[in-house]
Amino acid sequence: MARLLVKNADYIVTMNKNREVVRSGDIIVEGERIAQVGRGLSQEGPFDKIIDASGKIILPGLINTHHHLYQNLTRNLPSVQSSGLFHWLTTLYDIWENLEPEDVYVSALIGIAELVLSGCTTVSDHYYIFPRGKKGLLEAEIRAVQEIGVRFHPARGSMSLGREEGGLPPQSLIEREEEVVEDYLRLIQEFHDGDKYSMIRLILAPTSPFSTTVKMMRETMAIAEKYGLACHTHLAETLDEEKFCLEKFGRRPYEYLEEVGWNRPNVWLAHAIHLNQDEIKRMAKDGVGMTYCPSSNMRLGSGIAPVVEMLEAGVKVSLGVDGSSSNDSSHLLAEVRMALLSQRIRYGAEALAPTQVLEIGTLGGAKVLGRDDIGSLEADKAADMIFLDTNRLEYAGAHLDPVSMLVLCHPANADMSMINGEVVLEDGVLKNIDLESILEKHRRCSTNLIQRAEKKGGKIYANSSWIRAFD
Ligand SMILES: [Zn+2]
Image (cartoon, rainbow, N blue to C red; front, side, top):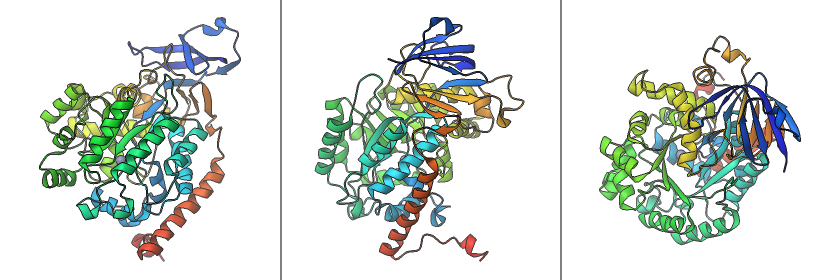
């Protein structure tokens, strides 16, 4: 087992029980785990490798608990730049139904590259586009994430309530419940690892109340309970969804969740914006967690989730960049900052401190994913950490508080990242992929995908009236 010393970091933000920050600190890594965090550890050799971290601040790797990586193929689509969720979705479904495994693979490489560069070491991605007859889509995504070397919680999404049954998605993206259950079992066998320091854990994740049958929700929970898996879905994202739930199920979104038996501690929800105070209390009591996705929520005009009230009530809160088409970015450290700023709009400047949002982005993510082996830098935790150079333009003049500096100043990229004891990013460069050539492939995939959709649907997506004005 390789023994590695990270020495002389300016600061180590441990996120341990006492939230200690170690000045001029060292970390000993043994294999995939942290053996020791402290000062003067150079004496504890021999070491196979020594990393000089002087001039750096080290944080636990950030955890992203909600995303749709494939959506970076359709970022900034002109016709939905100013659309709310339902119009945005119904436009984009018609493009996404043309996805091929190669598109999913290349977009996952790009999305994960963005996440690693922005400080993320653990990702949950919600993948739910399964055009009829296409195979190997989630597998393509998993292959890409494993190539870069990120800790991964792939969430197997599904849509079973199509337009013909009063749902939102087209029939071409609808799967039968039995098919989905069969696929769950296959994927669990093939990929799921529930052990400590696991690099891949499967999540079961029917997509949303307006695209999923009640039967799918119930059957999913039964499988999850049997195999000890976590479950995930979108809930209470917009007022349109609330209206849909009241009309279709005669219940508010959280009541619907209770009705289908999903108000359990192995569940977390993306968004959870439109909840009343009583529902927040029930969510805390049920142990249901959430992902706060401020950029996406503001971009789609969905609202600002009641995160401060949730934290006060004891709800598990984590952070997510959400799908690239509704954020147009996947910068997780930027999302940490956005979380703070957006909550201050709702609750005022004193409601949330910079260090609290960093906590949500690390320990909060670990809790939501049901893990006690990531989220902090201390003995026996997985060796997942990011290094940021403190001597950079963005931080000039901000050094009196080097921890809050990372949140309040313009979001920087990580200079180095270690995941499971392996360095995957060094001097700002991803070690396991050639980003230049993947960017080129990605551009091709994105253009071809939109052209295929235009040809099939007889629509034009590529033109922007704003650009035309300058022709
Ligand atoms: Zn989402």
